[in-house]
Figure 1 (cartoon, helix red, strand yellow):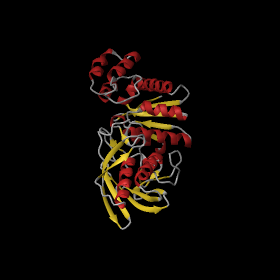
Figure 2 (cartoon, helix red, strand yellow; figure 1 turned 45 degrees about the horizontal axis):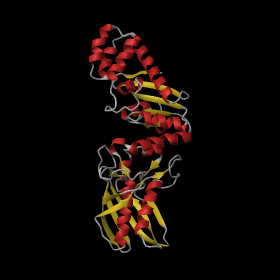
Figure 3 (spheres, one colour; figure 1 turned 60 degrees about the horizontal axis):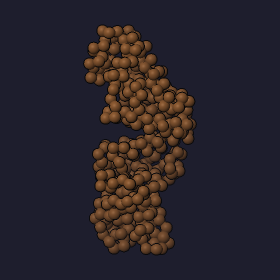
Figure 4 (cartoon, helix red, strand yellow; figure 1 turned 90 degrees about the vertical axis):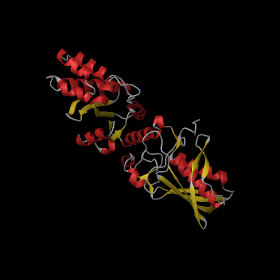
Length: 349
């Protein structure tokens, strides 16, 4: 079970805390922090502020910052609780919460982008405190949600109008980037359902090159350092064609069989690039300059003077494709495209 003392609440846990706090306010208990039950067991405390007007109560919280960059950090999550007779609990979105427009996500097109696990978490936390026969309407809003969502993958997934309410465990593990991996998984699953291939890129530079090369925006999936994870999802979902498009520095790692691209996991770019160059016949006069280059882009400044550099990068792209094809089980069509910030597309194969 995750340790709540070292993890931060998801948007789903923040929403559940606000729903519980607002319901408690209606029941006559005003609190500045509430204990929330997590989807997979355990509890955590979330700071809240509450207000009331007649029978309607509100609670809000600021989503805490984690150790990794999170565009939802410090987003204000607000819940309105209105009591309903009969015991039913209705959960809807409002301003700043997105709506689903495409298939392949955990909720159907037309529904609010509030995933099943947060819905259950909100419901269970309310059941803990509401008397029998009393239910409630829970409306979740995120005042800056639509603005923040533009910085996420939501538009590519067909979620419009705001953020998603997410969270499988209720807490984010900062070092695992669980939310980002879940976004990758959902995007690839959606592409598999819609048919066609995918173009995997590592970040914004890759996305920009994908547009230049004519790959559809909806088929371009940003995987960050989690290439191995993305390829396993592609394999599991039966995606038939994968294009890997990346800057030379990251792609060189893949040529050496490295699929977790975080620099703390493995960083042998120089050694891998040098080994392939020597194998391909790089003249000895280039060896010292290439070996001493601080970055792959710096090594290119020397390699572009070699008359066989175009042949080499086509060969390197083929080597990368073979590595990826093997990782995918050998049945997937794979193309690799290498680019440089300074020299553009270097090779493809």
